[in-house]
Picture 1 (spheres, each protein chain N blue to C red):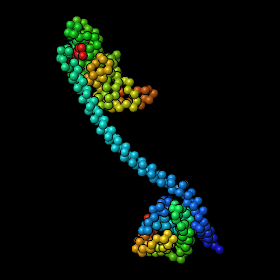
Picture 2 (cartoon, each protein chain N blue to C red):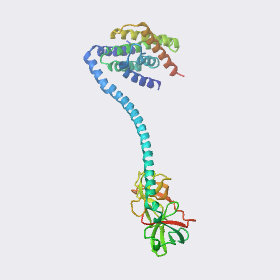
Picture 3 (cartoon, rainbow over the protein chains, first blue to last red):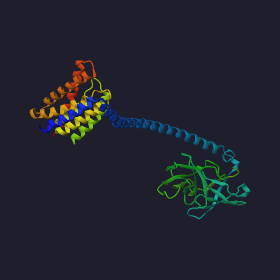
Picture 4 (cartoon, helix red, strand yellow):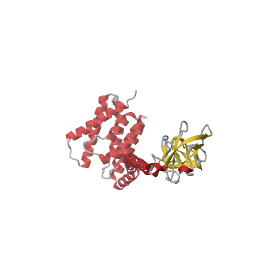
Length: 246
Length: 142
């Protein structure tokens, strides 16, 4: 008897035994369903579930973008209305226009002397504005002159808020960095930063700076390293407004 | 490599075929196995026939379990057929597949008590035979 026929008889006999004994059939069937069919069906079901979840995720992402855009619009409108409603704009008498009479140092001025002082109602810590936005704050007042510390001074700190995402931070003058913004915050290059109004020194909504560079590589620090560019351009600016009793 | 692909295909079809079987469906597991018998040696063919026959019928507790026996018989018969018939000729492959599926179908209808409908039987048999030809075209030895 050749090897092939022996092989055939062996498998045929085995098949016949399995096919005719119900207990063996039942046991093999249960075993195969539990070990092969159910896991395969689970894999298929998981794949279908993943596909469904992906679609759901896409839908929610779109919804999230729509809601965020809506929130940004509301936030922006709120800032605009708050700023327009603030006493500084509502009452022109609360703003004092002043002209710079001296810059110190001459390169990048950190102190600028104005031609208006206590006689015109200016007080210490009053914010100073230009047409672009915040320029600094008054640090010393004399009867007919006052000096303000510009945004380029390293001791100046301004509490700001990102108009796009609402992230809060502090602009560090001099170094021109945005501080205390934790990793993972929604900050992007080109974002506008306006005063948050939380420090009670500056009215809210004043443009301060624009985000220039975001570096998230330094994970040893709790906060991101963000460079900003101030909106105050000292070159050629001689006219200022000092906001008083805001 | 081709044998491996065929075995994977046979595994997939044998897992689902018993659950999804309809009288007009082609017998995918048998189709793949028939082509495998033509390409592989008898031991591989027998092992695959026995394993996938059990897998196919084992997935359905109501099955009568004739597939392992039929597949093993086909594997042995094919090994003999290859000795006497040139199985590289397409028409021979087609006739071989057609007759094999036809016989298996008749047996399935009989043991499952399904009413015999010749158009359905012919459709399923011809579809299966064409699938074997298609496999031959796809996996033809260069």
